[in-house]
Length: 303
Image (cartoon, rainbow, N blue to C red; front, side):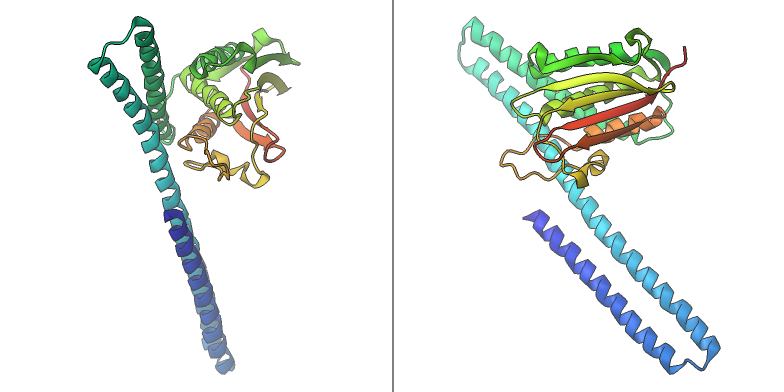
């Protein structure tokens, strides 16, 4: 309901801007025609005309962009609220159950495991929000070291299997192509790169649905770069959305009745970390229901 209201406002400001531009064209054009013999007045009239048109266009664009940004902020707040509220409510329910009645040891251990899972989810959401604020501060100093990138990726894969309760073959590693796996090293912040790779893996798993089949590989496009490819066979991304998914708070609109949970920060954080390390990240997809491949390119550390 709220989104529909925002779209109506966007349409209103867009139509208003077009009407104002049309009115300015008509009035200024009429004035120029009436005073075409006065060269000085004609010159200033033309300048004034273009100034009005540019001002109206910029004002309309600004208003529409602000409405879209506010809409994204509202979606982000709703998503974060849900991501925080759900695990807290779950933990509280288990604690109240343990407090009010006796449960056997097996069920008690199950409750402990579920509460730990909820705390991990809660901590992950908080860390994402904090990381998004951190990467947005460009002047922050970060430690730099030489990193075994292949080893870091495999470590992130092991953590993702545990966190999402996956079978070993759900995330499968493909040996590096055209480069010695032991020699894949990059320079950078280990924590930041760990966050970037983990976010890409989590995103692939999250949008794979019930059938998680994610292939992870590394290759070397040239002597100066290495590239991490994470391919899933999930719901895919429309071509027009491939660049937008890396914007802050942006989430691809879905027609599904059960939308995928998230804050819209994961890939934004990946892009910010990639840029801070002199690299880039991009996505490729054959469209909806054809899976997605996210590629993270980083400068290769010289031997």
